[in-house]
Every structure is written in C-alpha cells, then in structure tokens.
Image 1 (tube, rainbow, N blue to C red):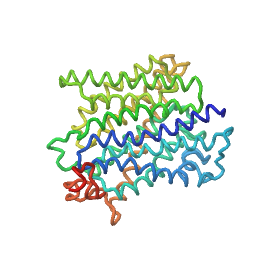
Image 2 (cartoon, rainbow, N blue to C red):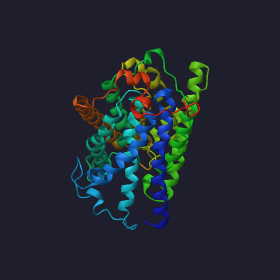
Image 3 (tube, one colour):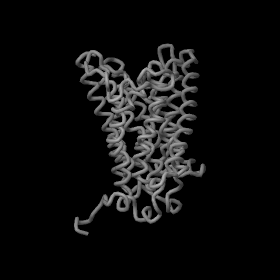
Image 4 (tube, rainbow, N blue to C red):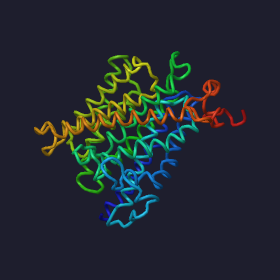
Length: 398
C-alpha cells in the first residue's frame, strides 16, 4: 500500500469512528430530555467495549481463515497482524474495527429510554462475538460463504445496516414499549439531531470511500455517489413531509439524509451518479413511508432503526444488484448479483433475528441483569437513575 493510501485509510478510519459520536447526538436529540445522557452513552461506551473485544478476539473471528461460516483464533490480540504498510493488515483491522463499533450502537435507537445500561454492556460483548463477527466473515472474508458465492456489499449494507435493523426489531419487541409513549413523544433537541446527521454524513465519506482501501479513482467515485444519494433522499423526505403535513421538518431532513447514506452503502463501489440518484430516490420514499406505518406493527422502535437502517439497507442491497455498472447489475443484463444479494439479505435477516433473540432472552433471565429498567427509574429518567447525571442543569447549584 503506497504512502498516500496509508494516509487516506488512517483518515478514513478516524472518520468512521467520528460517526459514532455523530450517532450519539442524532439519537440524543430525538429522545426526551431526561434520557439524553443515557442515549448518548449507549453509543459512546461502544467505542470502548467493542474496541477491546475487536483487538482480543473479534477481528480474528471475523477475518481469520476458519472456513465459510466463522473465522478462527489466529489473530487473537492482533497476533501476527502486521503493521507493515506494504502488507496493510493492521490498517485494515483498524478500519474494520470502526464498523464494528457503530453497528451495535445503531441498535440502541430501538431500545432508548428503557434498556438497562449494565445489561447493554454484556449485550455488546455477546452481540459482536456471536452476531456481528460471523456475518462480517460471511460477507467480507475471503473464505466466507456469501463472499465466495458472489454477493456484493461494498461498505456494510448487510453487515452493518440490515443486521442492526433486524436486531433492533427483536430488541424493541422483547424490551417492550416506553412508558408514556402513547401520550406522544417529540424530540427534545432538534439542533442535536441535525448536528448528529451532519457528522454522520461527514464521517460516511470514510465509511464508503475508504472501503476500497486505497486513495484512487474508486474512492473518488464512492465519495460522489455517497453524497448524491444522501442529498436526493434528504430532498425526498422534505418534499414528502411537506405534502403530508404542510411543514418542512428538520428532523425529517436529517432522517432522509441518513436513509440515503444507508442505502448507498452497499452500492457505493459499484454504481455511478445516476444509479446513486435512483438509490437515493428509492431510499427516501421507502423509509419515509416505513416510518409512517411502523406503529401499526405493535412494537416501539423508538428512533426508527428498522425503518431507516433495516429497510434502507435491504433496498440498498437489492439496488446494488440492479444498478451496478460494468456488466454486474441488472441494468447491464446480469441478474446474478441481484440473486446473490437477495440470498445475503435473507441470510442476514434470519441469522441476526434468531441469535439476537437468543442472546436477549438469556440476558433477561440472568439474575442482576434483565432487559428493562425499573418503572420508577424510567419515570425519573435514566440519566439520573442509572448515570447520576443530568444533561441540563440551570445554574450548577440546583
């Protein structure tokens, strides 16, 4: 790897890590003011816990050569992971660590305002080990079965977004609805939401343009299509919001941008600008109406993780098979990748749903854990009850 690519990949890794604080602000603004510290901490603590797990065994399970389903323990503690820039192995492991950090943090949008923080810490370790690492191996490791089959996921549509979206549905269903949600809940800090979306958009250039692992023309193209899809989906959300409500919502614009970024993620190394416009358009429409009908399904996905990341990721995976250029996609007369990506999508949904369900069921019956905070703690707000802090203090003396 040349020095320019090394510098770019170090920067791309930092950009992807910066997405997690961006997600923390995005989610933190959407919840009630009594739960903002708790919500931000779900994301922030992932930067610590997942980093440790990744170095100790997560990377080895995801990218060790163990067979089609899971890696091995050859790289435990980053053993034999070379820092030689010519090899690029440690740089790749660092870059992939940032993806692992943000993925479980995405899930927390579905369980905000009522999930026990101590249980979440254990969940992080278990979920990265038993859900994230195997799916990452299937899709991105050279001996993974989906990689070998020919499924294409440039930067994480299946591994990150579909995976997190499905896990979010399971978690929201098992933990139950928030207290007081039937009376209506509105975001307590819209500027936080827009700031968080802006940071996510900024960091996403590392997420997608970095996934080619080089400072080259592919990175330039991925950068452009990433921005284009986000822009189109943002505009779609603003227009649809105005049609339905007569207002142009800041939260809607922020959510639309994120939906476009999600959808372009698996396709960003394979499509051109016009494909990105089509993907952004589809993402905007599908996720907008997914949010509007979510309440009919009886579970409280508090911050619309499934609608944005699950539906957006599924559309992105399918759209990759449709709009990929260079003789790869359906628009060029080749249906193979579309079929492979449908298989990858279904496999990810089934595995993530099943194993996440098992993990959470086990955690719910372990003495001292359990999924849900006490009712009194929820009513007081998780910031004070679980963290002993408040996001907003009038003069520091009250």
